[in-house]
Image (tube, rainbow, N blue to C red; front, top):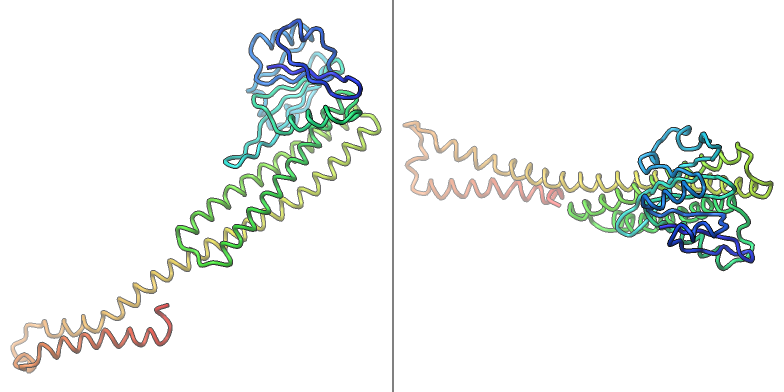
Length: 320
């Protein structure tokens, strides 16, 4: 699917592209390719002399492979954008290409950041002026989206903290808590990665001297916002580690209680085992063997030898 965006009366106007002729008639500042098929890739090549990158090239980590100028003089930028849903979070790679004062974007899934930018630009005249404004605002909106996701992590960790520190955790509840902590840690890591990638792209744009004075100031503000979010993610990593250690500590306490019970039972059963062993000996001369009350006395002695340690342990509080 292709969406072209023109500036009309200071507003960003979205144009749905159904054919090559539709694309040819537009005067866009931004063309967004959402899961383009082979025919749509061919339109881009014929009309703009642009070869869209393959999805396999999106995930390169090296800076030289994510921000560069290709042989045709077009600027290529690879960036990750966050998707945070209730059931999962992912980083979606996006390829940007600057050519002929047009921003081309290519991705395989619709992104919340893109939807939010389109909505703002439609309703706010003068919000965008050129293709570089579009890219900068995409990155600024990405930072806002990451900040909102961080607030969700804060709220989730606060709820987890209440469960860990204000209630007695069973092993099953502790397992659920650890699973929730792991999900929040994964989201926090993805946010940090997203911010790092955005910082790298903004720095590349500033080094290439592609931005106007106002755009450079906006880029610097984005970098300051990212710096602020880095501090929040670091704090959240520390809080996550604390909650994880506390939860594991409660699991160890529960296990120690079980081991303590087994230890108490083992100690309590040692005296009756000793008595039974003595009277199980096969010696000919044992005076107790001819007692009429020998058997009940032996049973009573074994019962008393079990009760006495349990009473002692209970008084000491070792059975709690």
